[in-house]
Length: 196
Image (cartoon, rainbow, N blue to C red):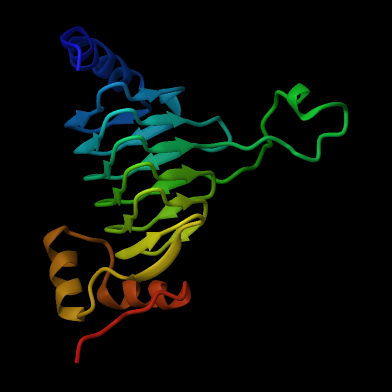
């Protein structure tokens, strides 16, 4: 890594992006060569971290809310907004306007996004969830769930035992209860592999 690039990222670019965010919590760490387009559409909580070479972009129809204690691995992408593919006035390339009434992107507290993962419009990643490397998320991942693949499939609950889940919920000051998490996991078909 070039010392000049490190200087630029840490002392110039990172503070610049942080100052332009809609909201920026404390401890904002943007990895080397990562970039935010339209940062004014991003609400970022405390203790935000990205690995190197991440890319964040959205439009006014898909605002982004990122909670506290969220980590992105290297080469992750978060892209909000879609174009109207039913456009009939010419080639799609001529349609410069995004489709209105899109969904926001929400990443709740304590989420870990693995390397090369892609988060798209309509994604809601629940508290404490883990998205595996190279996963693609454009739908709801319930709290404390591990999801992988393209598109990301909800594989299993992070904690098998309700006692362990209760401990983490208490330790992070969660707004969820064990019952709420288990109900959301069940609603989305997440397997809870309890030990015997």
